[in-house]
Structures are given as C-alpha cells and as structure tokens.
Picture 1 (tube, rainbow, N blue to C red):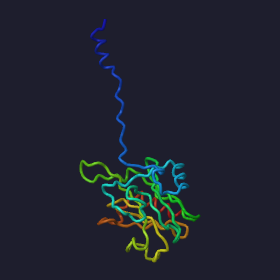
Picture 2: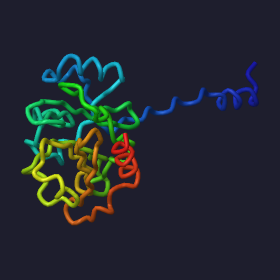
Picture 3: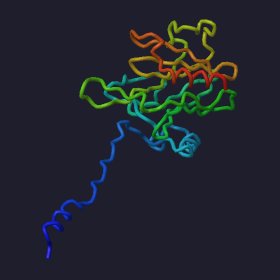
Length: 211
C-alpha cells in the first residue's frame, strides 16, 4: 500500500537533470579541411591536436593579405624569413587557447610558434543581445602593408614579410623574424591606442622575441 508519505518521497526522488552542454561560440575547422596546406604541416598540426578557430565571417574582410581563400581564415602564407621562401602560418587552438604555428619551407632560427593566448579573450559581442563572435585574425604583412607602424623605421625597407596578429577592431601586434628572434611591434587599430593591447598579448609577444 502506497502511503501519503511514500507518495511524497517518490515525487521528490526524481533523478537530477543532465546539465545542458555548452555550445562553443568559436567556429573551428580541421587542418585536413584546408587542401592548400602542405601535407607535412597538416600532420604536424594534427599531432598537436590543432583546430583552426575562424574569425567570424560576419565581421571579416574578404581578401586579407596572405589568405588562401575567403572561406577559411587564420591560415596564411608568406615569405616570413627571407624573400622567395614561401612559409605557412596557422592559428592552432587546443580548444582553450590558440598559438600561431609556423611551417618553415627551409630551416630557420626563429621559433616556429608564438603568441599563445586564451580564445575566450577574443570573444566579442557586436551589440547588446547579439551572439559572441571570435575576433582574432592573423594576416601576412609586407613592406606595403605596415604603413608607419611605430618602431619599424630601423628595419625599412623590410627584407621579407611578417605576421600581423589582430584583435579585430581593438589592437594588433606585428611579428617580424629578425636575426633569429621574433620582434614585436604593437599598434592601434582604428582610434584605439596601442596601450589597448591586452597585457597577456604583450607578455606573450615579448616572450616570443626572447626565444
């Protein structure tokens, strides 16, 4: 016989609800989904467990310097150590943070990875109530692209390309391989001063320049 007390207990003893799975706001592609990448580089990225976070297409600009296609972002190529040497760079994410990984066409003394930073830092809400968008983007910058970026006058004319690492709409850091080290040149984007660069980005960039 089911008493009132037992009935009450049966009502309260429902199994706990399974927590809702959080949706990753960052769209990612696998290295194998980028046919233009050299197979050796794809293997290297897969070994590291990389996915490639995508700069949100709704706020991206088509035809970025060094981009291989307008459909995939954060995969670039350029002469990053010497003219005529076609190197590759990819933003490699482990799901929590991303690092710029470089695939050198020939051996070089500059480190093959730099600027590891949290993905969450680059999530930007374009307007109140709108979906978060990932806003980190890398692009190839050469002599005709960097304009009058502070600190680069001693390197001009540039002997080869560099990598511009942007928090789109806020700030950027230009990386240039020089004498076996990555040199960093932070700059403003739009009306924001270079001081708007996140402290973590500046630290990571400085660490890279010392390697």
